[in-house]
Amino acid sequence: MNGFSFELFPVMPLTTIFRNGGNKAMANRIMLNETSYHGSGAIQEIANEIRNRGFRKAFVCSDPDLVKFGVTKKVTDVLETASIPYSLYTDIKANPTIENVQHGVQAFKDAGTDCIVAIGGGSSMDTAKAIGIIIANPEFEDVRSLEGTAPTKNPCTPIIAVPTTAGTAAEVTINYVITDVQKKRKFVCVDPHDMPIVAVVDPDMMATMPKGLTAATGMDALTHAIEGYTTKAAWEMTDMFHLKAIEIIARSLRASVAGDAEGKKDMALGQYIAGMGFSNVGLGIAHSMAHTLGAVYDTPHGVACAMMLPIVMEYNAEATGEKYREIARAMGVKNVDSMSQEEYRKAAIDAVRQLSKDVGIPEKLEAVKEEDLQFLAESAAADACAPGNPKDASVEDFKALFRKIMK
Image (cartoon, rainbow, N blue to C red; front, side, top):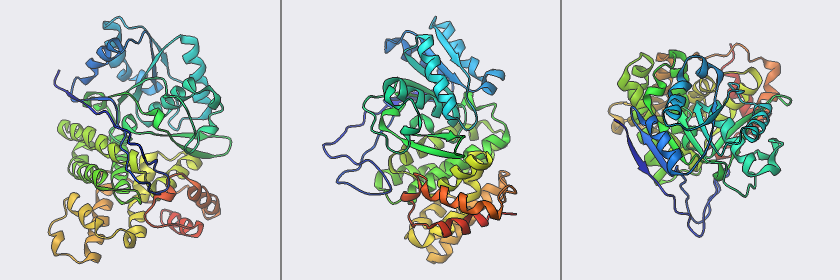
């Protein structure tokens, strides 16, 4: 195998912090996978992990398109070669719903499985996390009660997470997002109990991503890195992760979208590093607004993030100190140390906007109408990511920001 692995065992100090809107306690907390594998061929380690951990039967959670195009089969072939039984669950939508989760919980029980192998992007991962949490904490079977920081007591059913997109970093986060179709809203769940025990980040699993998806998920990863770097809860260790992620994404996303193998490999790593950071300190209002656009118009999450990121960066600039200078530097902007604060802030925003344009992300969303703005703004203001933004935003502020993507 050409990949490599590393293991990280987070130590929980006596006084820990759970990041909620940027309020700080006495200690910073970092939570990561127990084990992660990186590199071409890494999926071969899945069978070893299942056997070594004593699991008997896997619940393979993957979306229908990945099954249709043979991507899921790369992993199920590994299981079959190792004579590991599994049950395949594919009732997953691009923006997973409460019903997808509830159906999955019943399917898990019916199949007699004892671990989950989640294959896909954020949709598969989020569905798997919610299923795993409810199996271990059945009192939350309504799903809605998991919103925010639900008081679950038990770690979720063990998850081995295999990303097929370079963007969401759901394989290394304690977050997941579910769509409430009835109420036309997405809700964010933040739970240390949902962290996958193993992440398998194999760039070969991402090789068939179409250009549009590569661009959108890559910009989602950049949004994670920039929002995580500027959130109220950011600190030195997460700053290190986020700046490195920005650097990798900025240099490799264009090449990845163009189909370059090394670019795709870099993006697989960059998005994971961004996840190592933001999962532990939260995000900001670019994500709040993207969640709302996804819930109301079914806008792809990465596209919505890419539209909102430079607009939100402009809004936040005055509350970020010297951080935009380091963002500009990581984005590849030259001579930032000779720039004024106004110049390097503009340079950082311009670099982000240019990258988004270069990979084909639109700047406007035709679906947004003036009569929708009040609902959109109120929904974004209530989103779990909003309190972590470096600059507080009112409903009127959100309306003004949403107007900037209207045609």
